[in-house]
Image (cartoon, rainbow, N blue to C red; front, side):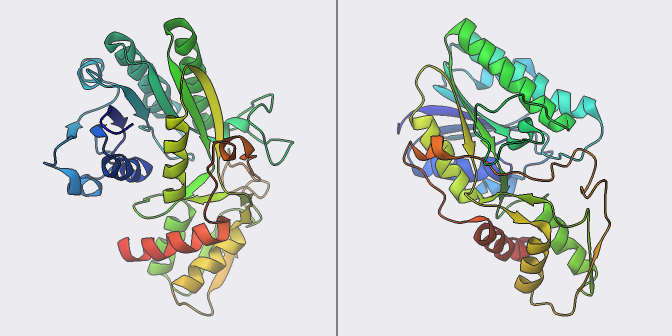
Length: 315
């Protein structure tokens, strides 16, 4: 795969910048498009001016920009999105997820780019009745606008692949954690404890139980799925093989910050949820991606602990 030119949307963001690091180290030519609304230029600054790397500051919804960005590329890694599940404005989710995916696909079609890797989300499953949840679970009934827009983007991709002979790897990610993250439960806890090291407010009842995966493990899975990509559409769950609850995450973060006698206060939330649209339980069946030779190096607790160690130095 070395020597291929790939386009990474959202490549200055949390997962995107780690993916860019891995691609550059593997010998790919990498072109990044990012408007820097969520991403940060320092995440990719080490590659600026290096042979085989190009950065374009711009919005993925800009059709003219994207047609130019996709020119002469062999594949697209589409990671650009609004990452905040709690965001209440449907228009922001629609534009940043569904419309952005349409623009990316049209840019690919205009430039005869035949392969796309799309980072979807476990939120497309909604409140699944089967756990671990396999990729062929149905019906897919997301309970958030974010999850609905990810599912709509998946549908667009599968339609384009059928109509225009493209190949796609759709990756349904668990909760990805690690260095460079700027939102999520670990980031929230660190910021709250920095503000008040004696008290930590936890949204919901603390029993929300989900799978967490370190970003470096996630990137390895993304690359494995891409290297196996041919024609057609393949959907892969990517996560750890276990799940932990928010109470456990709170204890890990408190411990890693070296704090003692912290009062943990639970808001109760909405039926125990942190917010409306928050999935209470999530654990993915990752046997399909494991069949490609990938497996997570860390479980959920280890991922949270390592992410906390990195983030407490960055935030």
